[in-house]
Image (cartoon, rainbow, N blue to C red; front, side):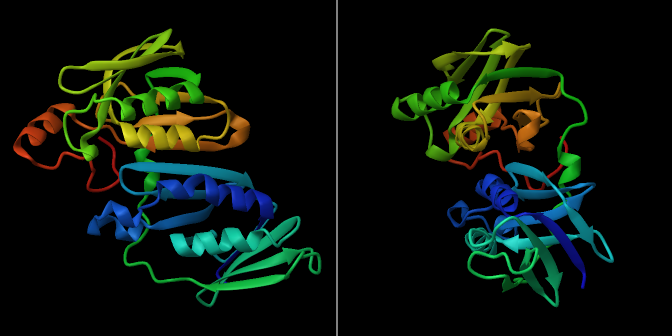
Length: 283
């Protein structure tokens, strides 16, 4: 046996569901990221963490561990397909579930034995992944210079308004926006002529314009549990944005910034300025 962890079945299902959106998707059409069509589970101290990333964005959720036994720290990287199968299977389990990695398989066992709703045992072969899951710890900044809070619903409405208006001057994948705060309102602009398509109430710090890809901003805010989202920014504009929710929800998201100057030049030349980073890294 290479690892076992026991966690509440509903909590494990929620972990996977809250991060899977950030994994590489087939429509991304990027050979580099295919090995990132995965969800990583690993024990981090006294919690079980689920992590997914496509190289542009990252989501992490945690839940308390009831018990962990292993010769080495429990960790497994699941394909997105396997993660979906696990989520479906967990609906048949009651209370706690033991998750084991044994002989190349991921095994779910009801705990205590005999209390499963449909089955007390599920086993899934773990597909071989071409590359290791990236070391994501270095991506999350140690310090944040600015923090604001806003209602998730307000930002989603503003974002959808942008998608229905002609505020973008380039192809869909260049839909970058600029965010700016005066401490009371979060201003959102787009395009080379900085067209504003709305501002929403916020509380917190004031900061100058920061560029971010709109699709990732909307995905992250939509995925964040809870009604209020806390967005944190480092002092360095090339460092990632952080998205947080109340501590009891145990969730965070990271989005890499885009360079709007390069986007404008590439748009005029017909090039690609998607803001993709070649690897998860700082700076």
